[in-house]
Image (tube, rainbow, N blue to C red; front, side):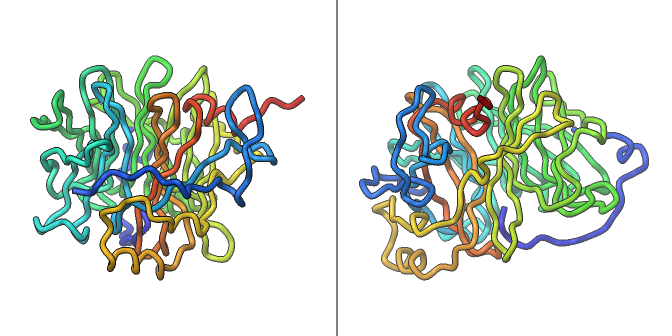
Length: 348
């Protein structure tokens, strides 16, 4: 998410406020560079690191224009990229937003679905893919779509928050239940400093309930675009921080209980850099390549990750945080577990 949003101020009801629930595939990029500062790998038993101890991220480059919210997933042994195709995407001739999946190896797109929905994310559980999105930006309704073949979809309202405004979301299997991290923008007495992440829970991935108001991160500053995972008793969450000078960087925190959160001493996870503009998709047109070259870049945002064939696949967005945006890929040469745990080294 990096387009300005409306700032309506309708209030949650007292009861709700008392609670709180066809782009070509990226080509192999021989010019990929390490994040950050062209660091070289340092040998480690728990995955590659930079000389200052960060998990080593290799930026592979830009694969699309006008694309922001995506989720890499593995379904039936294949790597896919969920995409929220905005109304202004260069390939969108439908007149409205929609969701789709891209087979990363072949570049083939699944049939469009969820027309008119926004800011989606995807989650795989067994033989079923689940997708979540809001009815409008700053909307009060979260819809869930699910399918066993990515062609035929069922849907249902997953969560309604009258008077509240929801944006990006992310889902994981937690301790005995599923957890959804949701970015809220209003009302101000609930969210504090816009934007703020609250949490919902579910036992079936379809019906969701907002968790009590102390399960939150963080009312004192801009915290947006969450991606949440659960490993060995810890919740890990990557989110977007607004930084001094009008720039934006993804940070990572972890928590045992979703209420008390500890930031990594190695933050940020990524920084905007010239490597974002590497060209990783041979299908980019000359006009798109020129657009990428000349674009203002002040952020890395909307990070999401999955594991495929022993490596961590990273999708993220870069641009000017005002509506000019680009989709890029990166990777970590190790498991998602090593990647996430690597941001919290054990003190010796």
